[in-house]
Image: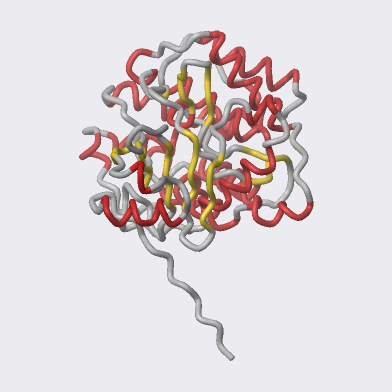
Length: 341
């Protein structure tokens, strides 16, 4: 006997009535709370993410993973990523130092890959730092403290397979370690910033650099280590009334704690934040006995992929600064012993 497999139903942000029927069926709203108000929640780069506000009720976030990247629908992506994210929340829930800075889970729909989360209110992310480099030392300290506690979370054996997150890691590996350095990758870099193509070619044809990036990518794909957020950049940090909150661990995996530190350092560098912030990252990594060279390499690769890869940032500076950052990327990757500064 063949058991039929139910096809996930994709939510349509333009079909409020259908979403209302779904929410009522899941017990998330009552008939008396209709109609709901729908609005985008955040950038929604990877997933459909909606803020749902019931009539006379508290808003919440509905997040659905579909078989594509929401911002780039031509790029396939594993739809189960929201379920991996749900597993992350489940594993960290007993450590208030980690879970206390993350939203609470209200519902998990395994069939339709829908995750429903508490709403952080009017909180905005920290992508504004790309414009002005302004981030308080206390905020950097909180972000580093959260990473330190995350490293201490023990992952039960029964959760290790799902949190290995192989499919999402494979996707991220392609766009972080491979595609940006591929000769014919289809990216029109000069359309982003005139002159960026030639600057990128300096790295693409640098065998020492590309070999080091490849080696870092292979380590990234290895199955070992601690629980890692996997996308620890300003778009995953919220500036909420109660302090910094962390969201979107859908790229989480079991691997190097140095990865999250490196991503954090990369974005502080791209945003031209106070050098003292980078020093805080280095001191924290050293205190935690992390491999500082590994932190530097991951930071260098992240800088590169954010400048010459698909996942572009909301930055407006020109070719001179981008060229300088690509040179910084090379030094971090090829000469990691020199540190983050």
